[in-house]
Image (tube, rainbow, N blue to C red; front, side):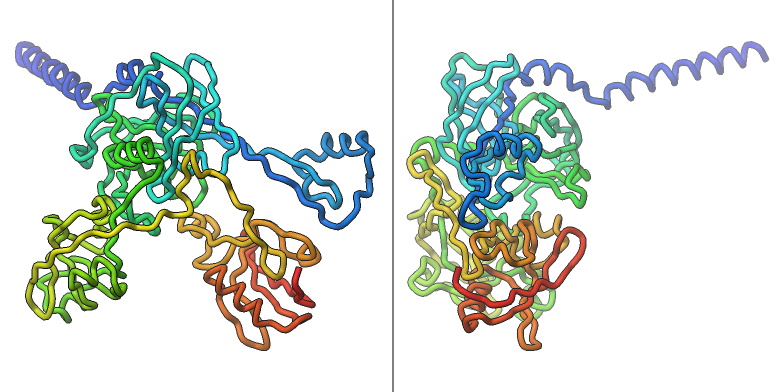
Length: 476
C-alpha cells in the first residue's frame, strides 16, 4: 500500500512539474521588448495660443496692471471670459510618438499636433527638442515631425499584413502624461471600418489605451511596430478594452508622401455607395450580401468614363474582392491617381468587367503641410456663433445623434444663454421643430429670418437638455 501511494505521489509530482513549464511558456515576457524598443518612444506636448476677445467695448480696469494680475492669479484660465479683458492664454495637450529616422524623423497622430503653435518632443533620456511638423494627413490621422538631432534610436518596423487576430501586442506611450507606460493585450480584429474613417483598415485591440497614448507605437512580440495607436471607443473617456491602431504599412506610405511631396495623393472614382443588405442582394439576384452598391455617379468622373452605372454592385477592384461598401474607399484611396484598374460589377443578374483610370481626390482642408500651415480664423454666423459638426466619437461622448457644437461666442451673441460646449439640437419656430444637422443648414435657416425675429433652440448641455430663446435676431 505504501509503495502504491509512493508511486502515485511521484506521478502526481511529475504531472505538476510537467504542467508548470507549459503554463509559463504560454505567458509572454515583455521585458526584453521594452528594454530594446522603449527608448524609441517619445512624449509629445503641444501648445496652442488662443486669443481672448472683448465681450463689450471698454475695459473697466483700464491700464491697472495690478488689478489684471490679481485676476490672472485668482481666476486662472478664466480671464478670457471676463468682460473687457483682452488676453491670450495657452491650451496644452499631450500625446506620444516614435522615432523612425536616426536623423530625427518621428511619426505620431495628426490630431495630436492639429492646431498647435508649438510642438515639443521629449526623449527617454530627458532631452527636449522643438519639433517641426513636416506634414499631417487628417484622413488617416498620420503626422510626420522632425527634430534637430542625430544618432537617435530607431524603432523596428514590422509588417501589419502578417498580424493575426489573437496575437499579443504591446503599446508604449504617455497616458494622462505618465511617460513610457507599457500596456499589453491581443489583436481583437483586423480591417475595422469606423464611421467617417473610410481610408483606414484599423487594427482593433484590447490594449489599455487612454488620452496621451495617441500617436504611440503598437508592437508585436518581435519588438516590431505594427501600428500607431489612434482611437478608443469609450463611454467614460477612459479605456474600455476597445482601441484602434493605424496599420504601420499604411502609415509609412502616408509619411513617405508627406516627406517627398508635402501632401497625400489619393485615388477617386466619383461615386456614392452603400452596403448590400440581404434584401438588396435578393433584389439584385446576388447569391449573398457582398460588394458596394452604386447609389450615384458623378458626371464626368472616373467612374462615369468607365461606364459604371447607378445600381451596379462593385464586386472586385483591381483584382481584390470588395466584401462590403467600407472596403472600396480604402482600396480606391490607396491607388495612385492615373492608374488603370479592372473593376468587376454585377449588373442585371450577371457580372461584367470594366476598366477605369482612377482620378485624384481633392486635398482636404484638414491636410496640413509645412508649406501651407496658416490657419484661418473660423467665421461667426448671424448670431455671432462659431459652430462645428461633432465627429462620431464626440457624438458618442455627448450622447447625441445630430447637432452642432458651440465652439465660440462673439460680439452681441453673449447676451444669449448659450455657452461654449453647448450642442444645438433643434430650432423651434412658429410651432415647427427642425433638427440641426449641418452648419450650412443652420446658417441658411438664420438667413431666412426677418430682422429682430425670435427663435428657440433645443440645446444639450452636459447630461441634460434645455430650451434657449434668442430674442431679436440681428446681424452681429
